[in-house]
Length: 414
Image 1 (cartoon, rainbow, N blue to C red):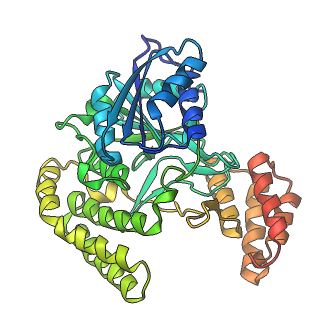
Image 2: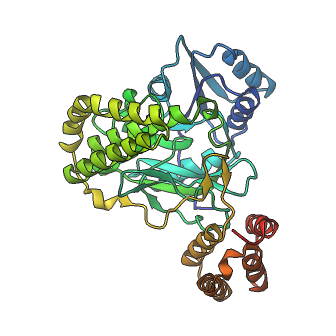
């Protein structure tokens, strides 16, 4: 645990945006806020026009069941589904805390998570925001996100997604951005003179990449706080939307994000390449409607994005090369089954990063054996590779044990 910085405890506004939430997950989310060991807190819930779920009643019942809640409730009930970005802006505006914790309704906090994030904000007063270690709730041993990486093609990715948590992300690090499944941000950053609010035009998806990129361009920084742990049911709030809906918004918003924020040559390259990729997908009869709509909407929205671009570029203080790249941040997650990838590549990524942050001779020897096996073709036998790790004498914690067991069960052919 990092050294505590003394001073009065700041008010934290926890903003939760819901739309037809799963009652059990919402109850767990709210209960985890109430169980936080940090005070004072205020809970801001924005319900985006839910019809099938009595969200206010669920939230109030959860708070009552917890006894003395220890925080004030601000509840905003919208008549229609405004989308995540506009609803989040409303929630932030309704709160009063100098620190804002954005929290998905399918995530739950460890009791000390907010406290760790607050301490980090005191130790790094110049940082704009802080990313906790978010773990997949099932099995609870696999990383969902430790901040965001932003790649050369403009794609945002969740750092560590699909990797078992063997401690390879346990150092506090500067990162390109924060994942809004759970992120702490200073309220002052929402002011137009700093970064500004989320872009309402996005509706949902990629708003955290866009906001993080805008912040980077104007010179803001983000840090990870891996001691702060959160468990997340990945995409539980959006799985019902269908792949086509998500594909359309992600592809459209990715183009908008690049056009608005990146240097002219990079933005143009991404616009043209993404447009061509969407059209190729449609020609090959893959996500035809989603791909065509994404392309049409992206280009139709370009005049507005170009107007926003002038504002962003007029305040540029940092070159794209300073935050683009995401080297080594490959994800190991099956978006179709919402499950981590069980593979030698995933294991190697975990061990390689672990060795980079905590070099150890037995770990180095194990990596060399895996590399040799891969070069001879034996690396395709997952059970054999798992056996090499076990025979190497290195420390094997619960998360790594889980992965090795899964690899042994899968056997050859991985």
